[in-house]
Length: 218
Image (tube, rainbow, N blue to C red; front, side, top):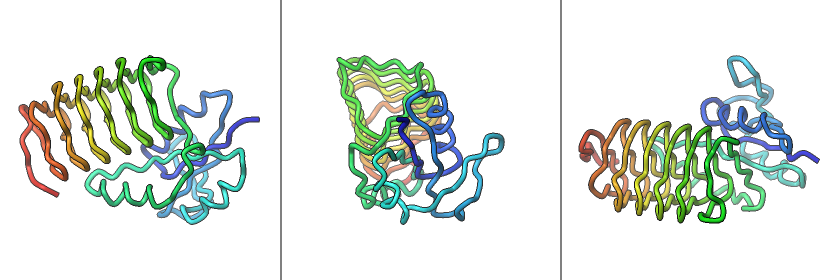
């Protein structure tokens, strides 16, 4: 029996996840749970996916044993609020669905991969990496050896996390950003697109530039 996946979200990350799941033989998307769009609304410019409810309906879906959940929320400037919302849903770990493209490079016996994660095409993990639940890694992102991504960390396209880096929960790393080895990124920080991070990043800060500097605190 195919797994039925309900995606919490909509356009953007939600559609990326749906496009990867569509290529799998063991799962299919049954729709979005979205708090902004009405039930029966359609998401997508080309392939259309139906909104089948909102987060209040999640409990009903989880009563069906074949249904799994992928959380496609990205907080950007509201990372802590988004993180707390995800936690409040109390989704059982064993019902979180991993959306992993077939081209992702994962040395499974050499690293720890959590639940409910997304790895888009050509993501690459090095040995001794730990990826926590609900992390999102977009196309061509890379994580160096002995690094750790806490829950709901989000790596945008072509971002590079060096070796021995700690990425806090709810952190967003922008496209083409590079984080030097042995750096600590505080919880809910935002790393701007193209930033080169050579120093530790404070919690709740926004950094950008080369070398990256704190623009402001959130």
